[in-house]
Every structure is written in structure tokens, then in C-alpha cells.
Length: 88
Image (cartoon, rainbow, N blue to C red; front, side):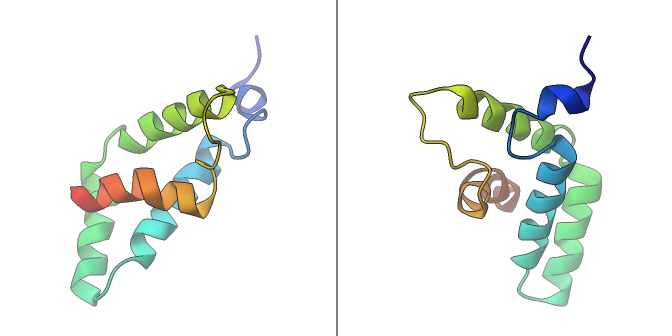
């Protein structure tokens, strides 16, 4: 059986890289210290499996030949998982 890292290697990012980049982009969108603190709270306490679900969705779309595959770029991350975090 392949390890999780071997399984993820066919994608442009591992889950850990995806989570780190989504978190950074989300935090970088803060426009004040209180907004930054609120965003950190969201990431630490509220998102649960949301980022993991978005990673699985991005991987699924990545292997679909009929889907425009930019979900692992900053543009794609801002458009989907970061936007969802901002709606919380």
C-alpha cells in the first residue's frame, strides 16, 4: 500500500503544502490586527475538515481532463478555499 505522501505526489502540492498556502493566503487578506486575530481563530477553532475537503476536491478536479486545472495556483486557492474561509 502506498503511503499518504506517495499518493499525494501525483498532485502539485501535498496536503500539508496546500493547508499551509491556503492558511497564509487567508491570513494575508486581513486588513487590521483584529481581523488577523479573528482569522487566526477561524483557522484554529472553526474550520474543522474544510481545508481537507477542499484539498480532496482540488485533487479530484486536477485529474479530471475536462476541468481547467488551476486549483493549486494562488489564483485557484483564492477563488475557492480562501473565499470559503472568508465567508465563515
